[in-house]
Image (cartoon, rainbow, N blue to C red; front, side, top):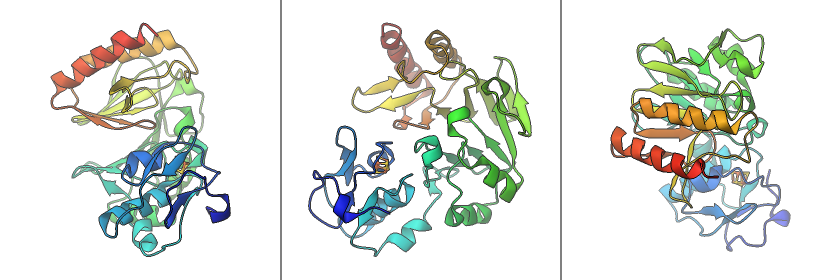
Length: 286
Ligand code: SF4
């Protein structure tokens, strides 16, 4: 629970504030940029939201914050915000909100599909979210992109009986399905698991139609205005990560949906490939 007494000094005056417990995961300023922004090593409120949709969105950011660093003196929208996840990005792809400090606020996503719903990475095991997931048809499969973003996977398995899928190279045991090797693995006609070792040995991406879920392998950097990946936050092999990024050029997608960093939507698969090639040229020089 955020404390007004510990509020960051650079919040603008008004009901919403970020306090000093912020871990700068980026969730609030990616989800509600009209209210929150990056203040250096922490988030801050740069504009108080107006009543209506903007205030609901700011309240949803409060709910999504992994460490409870956002506070508000105006509780009007909090009940609605708590029940507003998963939040639709398109008809069948949703942002789950309720990020977890166990995965440093990584985003997780729901794919709603007739063949069974899929969670990409695990959100916090929050009852309002789990209840809404139940209403949307539950969870058949939980794909874990890599070892850092597993959060409350056990609670989701216990609640929904979902099959947890992960690459064996990240060293987890006791999951229902551990895949091996570097070749893409069809999980269903519309779901392709793409091993992308590099960030960790067992990092994977998930391709669903035009959506590529990338974990910590690839994301959009709004400051640089391009796709990006991090050599600093690479726990296995930067050379392998570059190879894995190059491998993605063989696939068609228009969305990049990462665990950390911003989402990106390109106009066409060709435009996304051009973005990826541009990023690769820069990243190879880093
Ligand atoms: S969501 Fe919470 S922890 Fe993450 S940047 Fe915002 S205030 Fe900080």
